[in-house]
Image (cartoon, rainbow, N blue to C red; front, side):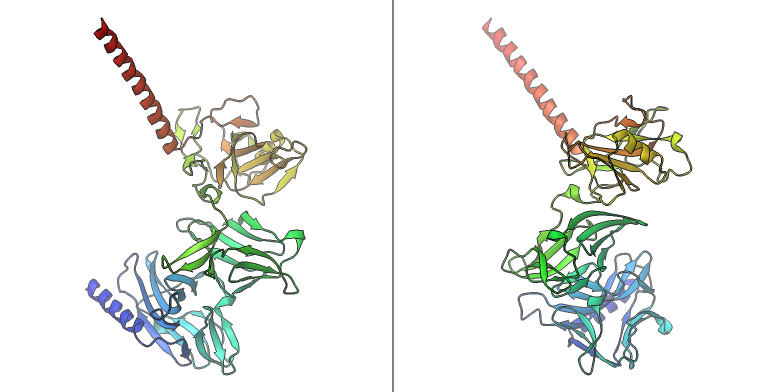
Length: 472
């Protein structure tokens, strides 16, 4: 019975998809999409309603609009989506999902309001355009989904509600952003347009730390940005382009900019006729270890791009803990006598924009974190990587984005841990990391090399002994 229902649904979707799709839907139009009676993890159902262009007659993929239902955490969500080929570039439920059962309706009402509904006409999403003279819903050449009146004036547009993708020709004003939500974590990424820069941020609860930024020269202020054919363009208050992130060094023009849900990396993409795929012509971060969540919390990204945990050896039973297994997430209420700072050699965090103090020693920096129960890590540096004239201390409320760096850079990264961890250092405020960070892959390579060398020496010695015996 379950398979039968899914088959019926797929047949309905195929009929809609291969029917006469147009780029316009007029007022009074209503379409429904059936939802499975039983929950099936991974299920996705789509009815394509509109498109711009014809994929069978052109080289590059076209824009399509779909009414979609998707299995999510034991329920089914319903949303209106825009696709460029197979890439989802806009979703009505990006920030707030509409969950429903049995059926999902999309209706452009007679008074011009576009609505998603469930059973008993329960409204889960709407454009709020009633009484504004809306005459039709249309997908434009740029991928902008718009509601138009009889004079072709835009009353609502998807470009004003950015998700995690920015399309060619789309404009974002200052104080707007793209947002992506990685799975299995409460943290999320944002790409934000600020007055003095564009930047990537890692958000965790109320905490926010940047991990990449691009600033115009001469401290000029940004009014808006726009994605052009060659990259992301930054404009001032006179609508004059003052800076650009150039991405398209190829013949093919830029199609979209995207903030990765899994990595938090920012990429600008073009369509390759050769591979028939969208490929990145620009990425903000080019190495794995520069990503804020390349490893789990309390994990270190090594030179080999593998993750190694911070392991602590307790005094009581000498048990070794992996990552944050024995590290509490909160230190408030325990007092400074119950914790200490553990120094990690030759590592740093990619997170920025933390509260900073200048002209403080490493010991003072450690004490500042110890005396702040919300502080969980501190980074001490000698100015710009080795300048002893101005020592700096940054305090963090999040342990993440740790990566291995070369020795001698004048950096010291310290994490707060409970007392009872073994150490080898006389300084009462800063305790040295007791175990060397070596990734699993790195360790295996070292063992194999040493094993091979021992085998070679033993084998050579045996051959020499045999040769000596033969001579005698």
